[in-house]
Image 1: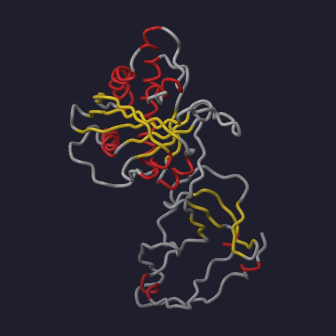
Image 2: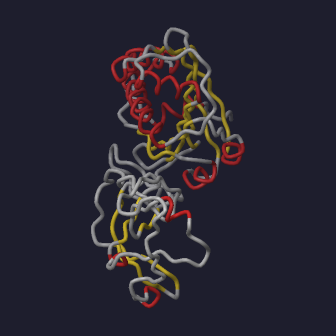
Image 3: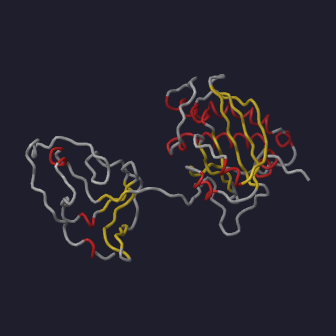
Length: 322
């Protein structure tokens, strides 16, 4: 028996209604009808579909063929079935261009790795395309893009092993100014996960991926002249109370939560405060001891005048218990 095509799997997963012109419509025609309208309504983008191709792949091939310049987003529908939506560099650049400059550029996009900002700017357009496609074929289900998958390592955790169908939609943007593709990877024989509840309609999925956060004790302005005199063995004196006011921040300085410095199982640790605020604005651009610094003149310590350097820490933080 022949394996179902990507279009067959997509139609099955989207639960089309039985009977009627919409149910009988081909997937290619459905994409061609919905994409121009949806693209114009969602972001003012001129887009058309030149074709749709179906294929099959597997878990190992997905990881081996991972394109670091393409945007990978998790893909979920009712029942928790997990797939991947892959937007190639040309399509991604077109969506970013039209939302930042109002037009699609004609130059070849510079090779770069996508970011979380790209995911936010492209994800809602892909969702709109999926909604439009579902409406054309009479779907009763809703599929949504989920969190950004940064690399193949994260992709290994985002999807299950097995066989996948691949439906690739080929686009022309800006009346031929640029071309790109959207590939939808769906598990063959997909079924709801028995161990997990189905995600709420439109709720973001949670993926096990590594992120980098910074624990910041304090920030301080210092004179460059003074800083340049530091030598191995010197210790920066910290203000009183910083051990109980540690900031946990993202890489760009946005506040996640507060905590206090202490010790757990013989290692330095941070106990987080109850309740975590939404991402706050980046912290002021002051010198941070743990990252490259930007320096400002300090009127209290002009060049050539070095303040006394305290070689001490407030209290014995190593014995602070969590």
